Length: 371
Picture (cartoon, rainbow, N blue to C red):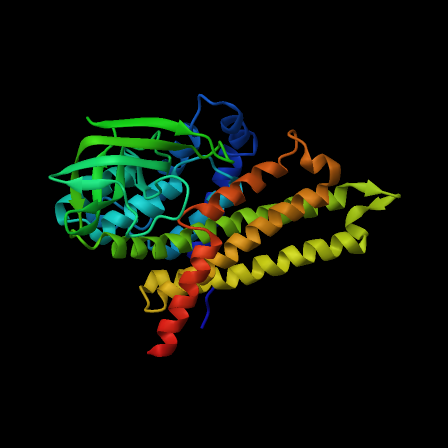
């Protein structure tokens, strides 16, 4: 079985990479990183919208272009490679997937067309401060069509137009759709390790909301959305890890010590070889996950967890070794190395840490072996 992208998908990947090289060199995420008044790059987001990237996997009947998830995986990898400071993961991997999975026909028609065209930005709100959120620890409540409580940090919560909120309903956990520009909603920016990807604390005080899916099924729906999003996050992380390897290799060829390029020294060769091996192992898991996502295979939970764990570890390792390869200058503010390191740390905690996904991988393996 061939798990590689098709020629058409590789062409889409190249087109996305070329566009992002032009519209989003590393001065763009650095500008957003350093300018507290700019939460994301509107120009890069507009360029992705012009390419119809947010519409990639949305069916045509809801305003999308209906390519599929393999194409979306290809786009996600390039978004990660460029460090694009845009709400792509929040709006596309999470909000869009939640509505596709649990939304009514009316909700799909109302929201998906806006997400496809970039008219609206969505996000997904789960965290409620420090500590792991569980189905039994939810403090945000949904009752009588109203939301009460605080979610923090919410990715892109300061710029999103609406959110899918995991809340405790009257008969169990549920997902609720809420307009973040409406009454009963207040937002406050939250500082994170990577300011080029904004986050916010969102407080709901009787905010009007509508149920997404059935009440009592919220936690199961959240897990299913996260399984699908995990593959896309993993592809984005793989793109970042590959960029770190390329950045370190380029520097090792151009930096001289003792009259020769530092890349000719065994210590640097081994360092970069170790990064390459981890990246390729992550790629294998990601391609398997992309297949499972595109076919909605029974193996999706296991494949998602494996891809997520492998890509978290690969990106963190690559970003650290990139700094080490650059030596003393790699630790400085002026060097771009820390931008990748920060993004790797941020993405490693999005939709759950490596520990969470290792637990899910073990559970998936146990379920398979028990069948």
